[in-house]
Length: 486
Image (tube, rainbow, N blue to C red; front, side, top):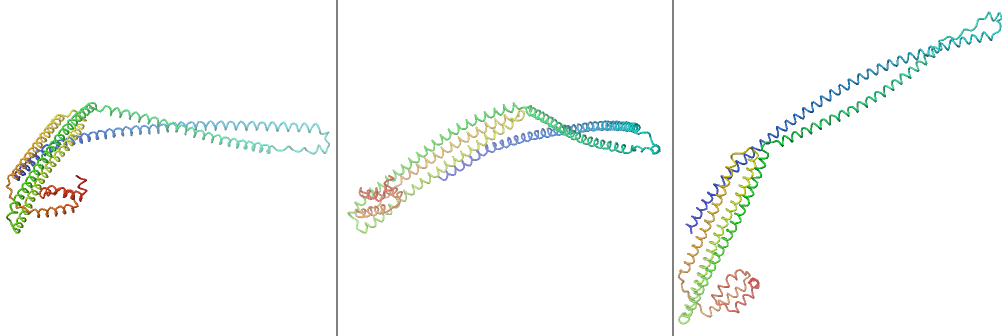
């Protein structure tokens, strides 16, 4: 058994080494594909950054030109406004001066004509109405007329009031004109802002259209899409193939496990049958020896025989128990070996998943470039990795079959050794002693609280002590839990 264990450990080490080699190659290939993907992503990011910088520069130039155009338009509008104001002020001043001088002249002429007419009328009226002058009256001179200073002052005051009113009207008109000009300028500024915004919107739309055209005119876009579709199809086919192989392997492995379990149960049944045969042989020997000893042995000899019988039964029971424990240990080792194989298969399946995922990512990354000469190497490496995986699964299956054959051979040797072992004829007990032992054992079984212990001990004890139907009924009634289980 030790040699078989050593050979199994060596085979396991060799299998682990063979598993590590393709795993390392697949990890190296996956790392290389990840590096290529990262390099392509960096190039794409740098190109995108350069395009963004160019668009920003173009946008800044457009904004600078728009600002310069706005400033020139504002200067032109201000100059035109200044010229218009100068022309209007000069014309207004000329009109005001001419109108004022003409109005003053008209007033002065009217006042002079009115004063001369009034003087002549007064003189004629005085001459016609007065009688012939007396000497006194002739001597007294007439009163002189009123001086024209009051009329002139009145005229000047009127002209001043009119000029003041005219100035106030002129100022009010100027204020209204300024308000109108301000409103016109505000409307013009709003129109200019709207025009600038329209130009900026048109420039932004043009830049957006040009950027979309540049993005749509990126080289190898169709090739990249076609390569990506092809890689998706290949990945789907590989996934379906892998799922089919995995289901076949799982089915085959489950069949092998069922066959192992059946073989293990068959060997356990054989061992139990051998144990029952040994027990029946021991009982027959005990009965024969009891019949012989009943005639010739004394009480002391019977006691010594009883002691030896107990020792022999204990030894036989311990041998059976040790054989059962050895079989359980062997079965546990086989189960652990099976668990180890299952764990290795799960690890291999996980590595296959990771490898196929890495191969898919690398294919997509390589498709974004111009036709890469390394894509063929990736496909070849993937095929070689799948072949290595299949070969490793076959080697593991062969190892499992070899372990099963070795386990079956060892069990057959154990059974043959147990069968060829000579049984020592133990001494028997008397009828009274057997009845006493049977009653004590029945009481012990009835007092047990664990049905599993009674289930294991009752078949052996009933065969050794020849339990009657009353004894079996007492035991089963004392343990209803075990009765329900049965």
